[in-house]
Length: 95
Image 1 (cartoon, rainbow, N blue to C red):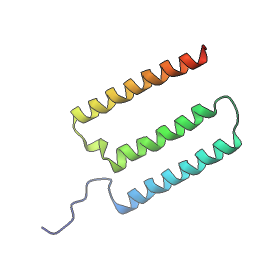
Image 2: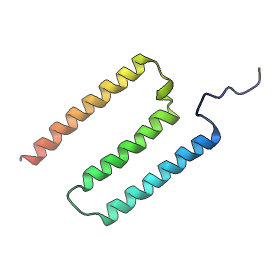
Image 3: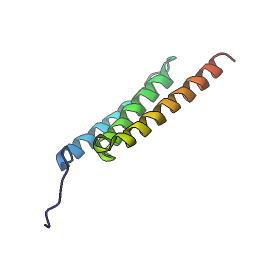
């Protein structure tokens, strides 16, 4: 039993594709920060960061294979973060 057990979707080619996507999103993020100066600049940056974190969570941290307790804890964390971000943005907007 010396064979390395590989889970579905965790081949080297798949991981390299995810790495390529992360690098491409980083390039898009840098380009957007330098070129785009509109009012949605922070939203664009947060959207790209969200995509990159989702890729890392699903493929490298294997959240897809986790049990329901881990997925529920992650969902609760994301919802709490979203509430705090919304409150922060609304506070800054109405000062």
